Amino acid sequence: MSELELEVSTSEDGASPDLSDQVLQLTKRINTLADGSQDKIEDLALAQEMAHATKPYIDRLIALNRLLNPVDRLVEKRQQIHVLQEELAEDVAEIENVAGGIQSDIAPVIVNDIQGEIAAVKRDRKLFISEVAAEDNPPIKSIVDKSDKTNLLSLSVEERFERIFSERFISLSRIESILSIQFPNNDKKRYLNSLEKLWDQLFDRDEFRPHVEKNRIKSLANAFADYSLIFRSPILKRNHRTSLASLREHFQSFFVNPNAKGLWYTRQAFYHKSIERGHWALVDRQYLNCTFKKPSIRLLMYARANGLPAKCVRQKTAVEDIYDRIVLELSLRERFFDNCHSITRTSYQASADEPAKQVYLFYKDQCIRISGKSGTPHWKPTKARWPGVFPSITLAH
Image (cartoon, rainbow, N blue to C red; front, side, top):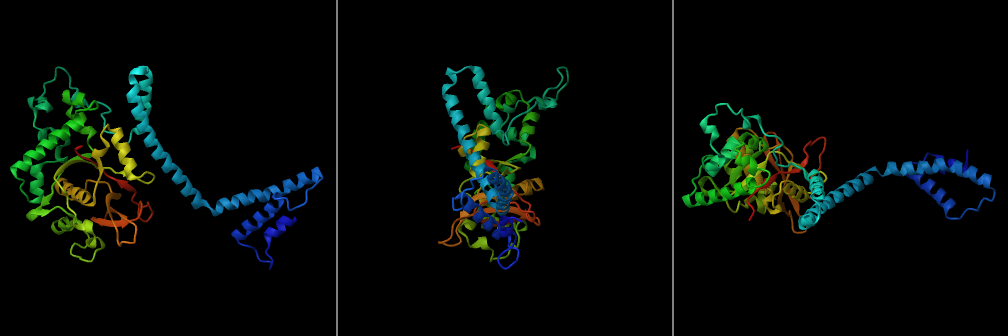
């Protein structure tokens, strides 16, 4: 047995050293060979023989080091991916800006190639019509009911959205019924005006305008099959402001321990923070996974993929998220949103000397659960819910 092997196999008292001790002993031994503290071997053949004899122990040292540090390597790789994705979002934005400014100076073929590559990178929950539905291309000689031939643009804005979203369009009248309220006429008019602007923002784009003009209702409905259009009311029953506190008071069946007063979030400022103004929101059933991307990056890529201003694709607050869940479930009589650790933009501080924590929501035991955490919640086998963000498309101001 060689001297190096003997040093690694036993400690001074004859006991087998643990893994860390083995690594330390091997490191020290190899360092003494490398730093010149050992005499040089003049015999070349002997030096080669010793090098071959030493190599297995060096390989073993490297393997042991990797075994000792798998978590560090995973964290490092995750950070690299996160940085790469942030850089990707910035690069896409820069390419778009540059390409937009010099399109007249470069060949159309190159422009098309650039736009194609950008589209391939950005396709993330993109709203688009992949193919025209068969119902929108009836045989020329077929007899079509006159009501089906009504052009979308000739209808009122509420009727247009009803044709596309069906029961997933939560109109003002349905909100009044669900929340037991009555909007003043002036407010109704203002809300309908903003709905008209939202229609233009969504459908007066190259992606959808041709389909709207050709009255392809089924194709448009398919494109928005995972979406609902909802009005978020600033008031609810008995003229209470719409806050987490008032939602919990009036819709107790959605919450765990509805009568409990000692729940942690009831002591936080966000518990009483209300929806500031009434507004429409296009909400996605599916969440954007935030395992490797921050919500802000996910929403930015989502906005760019759909050609929407970044400021109109928002992360929900806790009260908006809960409001959407309650209203849609009462209206549709089924749960609308996929379950995840929904990361809201609401944050709080348990005390002045503690870092801010994020509020996130999820379903458990048929109830909405509210939790708080510093940073992004992680997927666990015991809590198999991915961290995600639900995009909320509102009118750009």
